[in-house]
Length: 184
Ligand code: GRF
Image (cartoon, rainbow, N blue to C red; front, side, top):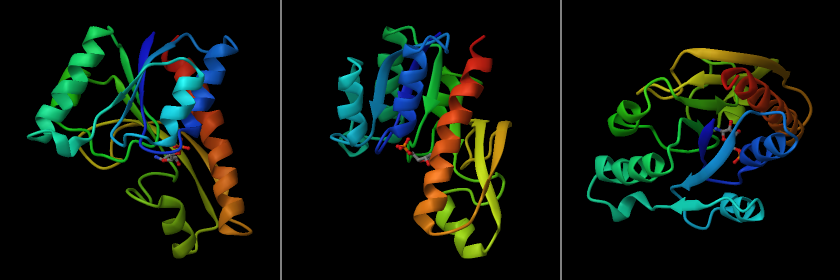
């Protein structure tokens, strides 16, 4: 499968997917990384894997539709089949959803539908839950609301940093395993 990974930040999930592909575990090729944050660390990581990056700042476009159309054009140019969101901090709009129906997936650091949106790990700690987790889901027009594909539980214990580390490890494992099944 030809895939594009969208990310706004560090890109550790991008890296886990790229490494899984290199190990021959995933029937996929990352043809393009898309970021809405030019200069984000994911750009450095993508270059290490020799993967081209599309860096587009949304505010340089007349509208969200224009911004997403520029992305769709680049994805179609490369015959992308699946869009994999990995820390892409922006709601997906009509233009991308229409171009890739049921072909956009996301990972979120909570057991959805609990704690959608920003800082899900902080929300879980603040709420005092003892178990949180990770969810992979199809993307629809809502914020972290699409059909759930896979989940795994993670204990909330120790420092915030310790919980974060366990969540990120769980993400890297769950995302690669779930993509492997989806791309069979
Ligand atoms: C992950 O926790 C992901 O679930 C969330 O954003 C974070 C991205 O981390 N949507 P990274 O950029 O992949 O390291």
